Image 1 (cartoon, rainbow, N blue to C red):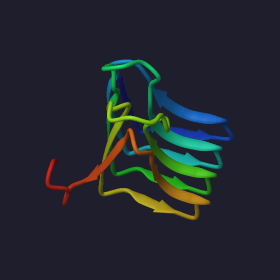
Image 2: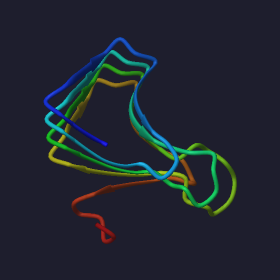
Image 3: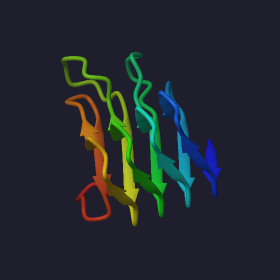
Image 4: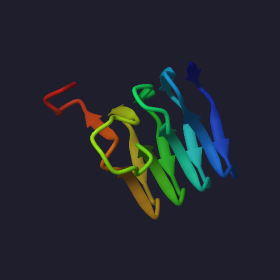
Length: 109
């Protein structure tokens, strides 16, 4: 999935990557949604992987989500963020125990 120079506003879930999706989202605005960009799946060993760069994520209930919140050690979503403006959300980033949100300074980047 590739999204660039776009805008998502007034949605329940702006963009959700599910089973085995690999995505890149650049230069895009997420504003006024319940959930901005998310990477999450209920399926075992099918974690989506999304990269966000130079995006504005503002005025959402939850800005960025990784994982679904199931107990256990199986990865259920990865989001990599770089050079984004994340501001004015009720929750900026939500990393469930089965998800991973990484920045450029994360050791695993």
